[in-house]
Length: 436
Image (tube, rainbow, N blue to C red; front, top):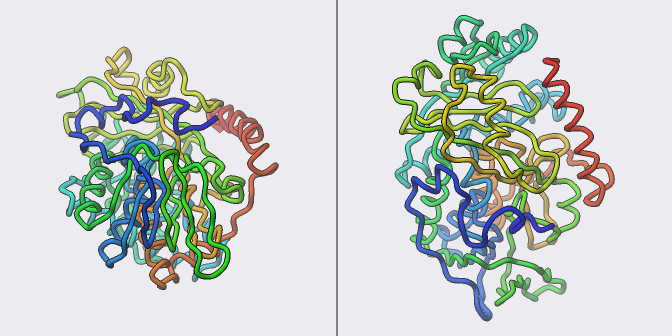
């Protein structure tokens, strides 16, 4: 099954609130015939657009190939949360890589947030400050407090405020949680607006974007002096360097990456504008996510709709009634919204790794790949694109730091990874329902 086309119409954005509220760009032409470039970027999401923009501004000739539309994938349909740090918390990073490496990874993630804020400012996209982390148990509340103390003491980050039940309830007006924290250095935004803004900046810098240009074959340069050939259904590009930036939509373009990066689906709804009722949902305009394994996440849009994501799906096909699937966790979190009208419902494909850290690798000497952001991609994917661009230009320290992290294949590789993930998700979903 090709996830690029399994759940969506060709050349169309999903029926999301973002697609309705953002004026989309005029379609970029399909690749036809033969073209040449210094660098080809495969994928028109945050990773690819950031890489292409960085390279073009450094004077490189860049062709970006997108099978659908720019921002079509997770970059244009996610929850819009610009989180701090890596996907793993710093105590887990210290156990994985040691204190020194964990600190460097934290600093890189801070660079990622700053990069997104800079891109957003340049593109005219508003970033709202603050993400709350809603905990379900006293043990999780204690861990949130310990994490805030560790960040302040060891990482010079003083923007996470621990919250007891009363403090969280003032911010997140749900009866489901018993405390947590709020990170004032994190933020939230309209994700498709950022994607489209990046595309405009990339074109202005000289990037040649081709949409509806599905890459189905790559021939890496073998002898020195040969060109890499990137083949679509209607053309090909000869290039010196290749960047793979397709994340959950990479398919089988590289089997070694596919064995380590698992595409999964997630679902989001938007309610009708809540007006004054929005004050019964959030005490401030912050985004929120909770501590479930199958995480719930939400924020208010600028027109005061609740944009809520949640609900697992044990299959690659989207359910027929996404709104019904997401309504259940929404009404569990906010029983005061029972029966609220849902105006938009959409699904999307992200990608995870076994250790929940992005997978950076060199599939071939002149090819770089970054993917598997595991739900933490708004910041990290933009940084990944910049790091790959810098590596192409000979400044590979940041890329190599990420590539050095352990990255194990899923058991069974690309062939058996999905049924084994289904079993694992079923177990953790049961734990969520039992409140464990």
